[in-house]
Length: 382
Image 1 (cartoon, helix red, strand yellow):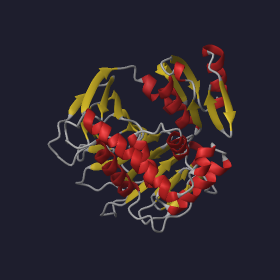
Image 2: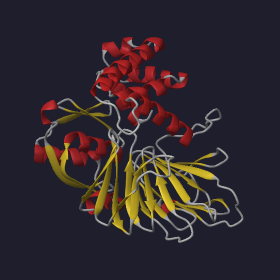
Image 3: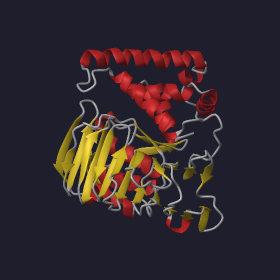
Image 4: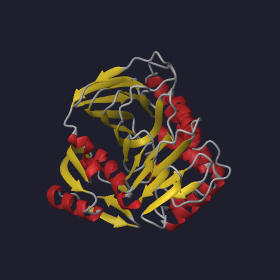
C-alpha cells in the first residue's frame, strides 16, 4: 500500500482529512481490491477500536461522502474561486478525473508491479520494473536504453516515428531517477513523481510533457519547436533553460524556480489566451490554486535544487512542511501528535543518500528536543 494512502487512512480515522484528501480516499476505497487492502491494513496495524469497527464498505463510503458534503458547504460559504466560479469540490473532482485519464487511460488490464519500484509504462500498456533489469545497461527497444548504474533512462531520436507515442515513468517515494528525452533534454525526477512524455518528439509539433510531482529540467534549445511542461494546475512555457518544477497533488500550490535562461508561467488551461508571466533566473513563480494568483519573488535557488545532488536544506521550515518533505524523501509515514510545536521552525541540511531517517530524527532530537517513537513502522512525534 502506498504511504500516501496509509497517511490518508490515519487522517480519516482521526477526523483530520481535508476535502481533497477525503475525495482521494473515496476514489481509492471504491475499488474492491483497495477496500480489502484497507481492511487488512487496519487489522495488521491494530488501529483503534473505532477503526476496527469501520469495516463495512457502504458505511465507510457513506461516512466519507458525509464529511465531503459538510466541508463543501463550509467552503461555499467562505469563498468561491474567482477564475472559474466553482466550488472546491468540483476542482477536486475534475483534478481526479484528469489524473486518472492522464496517467492511465485504461486500467482494465493493469499489471501488478511493486509500487515501491521505479516503473515504466510503455505506449502499448506494458509495465517494466526498471530496477529488475538484469544488466547495468539494458536496451528496452532500438531507441531506449536504461543505465542502472546512474539511474538514468535514455531515449534516442527516431526520425522514422511519425506519430506521438507516450511513455510514463513513475518514481516512488524514497527514490530518484533521471531521464534523457529524445531531443537531449535532461530531466531529474524527485521522489513521488510521474512524468508522461513522447517517446520521440515530432518535427512541427511543440514538445510537451506532463508531470505530477517534482523535477529539474535542463531543456535542450530548439528554435523549431517550443517546450512545455504541464501539470494539473500549472504550465511552464520554456525558451531553452534550466528550472525546477514542483506540483504535488497533495499541495495547494505549485512553484517553479528558474536557475538559467527564460520561461513563462501560467495557470493550466486549454485557453491559449491565458496570461503568461515571464520570470528571470533567480526568481520563483508560485501559483496559489485557491485564487489563481502567481506570486513572483527572488530566492536562493540552491535551496530548491540541491536535492539533485542528494542534499536537502531546510531554512526556517515549519514542522508540517518539513514532515511532508521527509515523508517523500524517505518513504515513511510521520504523524505529529504534538500540536504545540506546529508553529516551530527548523533549520537543517541533510544528505539523504548518506543519512537515514533515524539519523535525521536523532539530529532533530538533539538540537531541537524533538521527541518521537517508532511504532509499527510509523514515526510518532510526541
